[in-house]
Image (cartoon, rainbow, N blue to C red):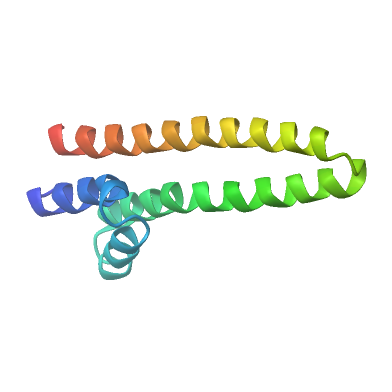
Length: 107
């Protein structure tokens, strides 16, 4: 893996701090002839999209819970639990992306 490939792969993961989704997408589209960089960019892109999908899923779950129970207090607590769980997962994914970006750059 060349220095340029390492840098692009690393920045794809680290872009969660400055251009999530957009930077890995651009790298993924432009590196079809570099398989390892292409794979890392796709992996970073999926890691950056995952929190959005998670939030949308939690919104749907909260809505369904509210419609089924018709209890505002119960739904409120359910939403608070989902927000806490979502925050933990998003934090873990962010830390993992930073770890992967640094690991690729150091190796």
